[in-house]
Amino acid sequence: MKVSVIVPAYNEEKAIERTVRVLLDYLANNFDDFEIVVVSDGSRDRTFELAQKHQSESVRVFEYQPNQGKGHALKYGVGKSRGNFVVFYDTGIDFPPSQIGDFLAVLQKTGADIVIGSKRHPQSRVNYPFKRKIISLLAQICVRLFFNLKITDTQVGLKVFRRRVLEEIMPLVLVKRYAFDIELLALGQWKGFKIIEAPVNLHLRFGTAGTMKGVWQTFLDTLAIFYRLKIMGFYAKNSQERERLIREYRTTPWDRVFSIVSRILRMRPTNAKS
Image 1 (spheres, one colour):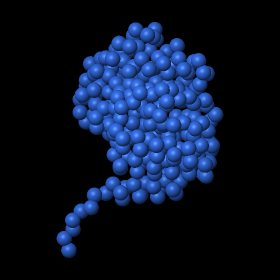
Image 2 (tube, rainbow, N blue to C red; image 1 turned 30 degrees about the vertical axis):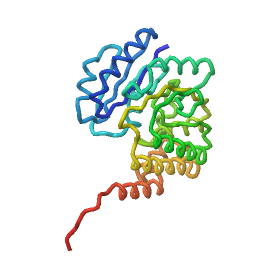
Image 3 (tube, helix red, strand yellow; image 1 turned 135 degrees about the vertical axis):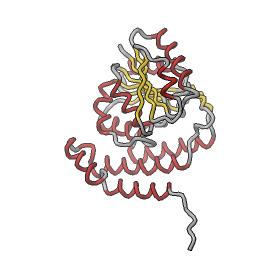
Image 4 (cartoon, rainbow, N blue to C red; image 1 turned 90 degrees about the vertical axis):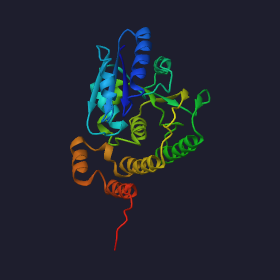
């Protein structure tokens, strides 16, 4: 069993070295065959340089420019990985690395295809802002309403997959940023893969609670995913047809509307003199 741990990082020069060291120590003492794949997502600081100091046969470091979003970084990392079990693990050690082994044990014991962390699991021990709790609850309501996705938390940065699952789903995923996890899990359920939630011990770092801009963009992306999956049937089309739609229509007219709206909302008003 080879385990690949994908670590996306954007401007994480203060946390990336500790993250790699702690992961490496845990994995080396618990797995015979593993790799850590660090992906610097267009970082503007020393993230890539510092991560490269730990480059070895077991630690592989990649970077691209410009910044594309965490979802893109994870997708890129999966493409570079070689393990038959793939772990998504956020930079910063918000979760003890021992939970990687716990999640893999759940995967094998239950026969699940995907195991995801959930802050709302009754056995979870979490420390994160009240605002984040409200956002998490609203996100749960949305994914249940739009996709009948019977999970309580899509956004936790610790997930474990069988490689064959990602090989089937990743080519379909379009979202690069905020709603990447929602699209990934909605497609996993649509494909009939078994998804299990597991408890987490989470100590969220200061400054990682998210913004209202991110919440709004996630909502717009989620609506677009719903339209593609439930109305347009985009994901069921063959690859040539999907590529044509992406090239000609930005996937759907709705996607174009959402894109325009989100750009308008991101624009800062300017003071013009008459």
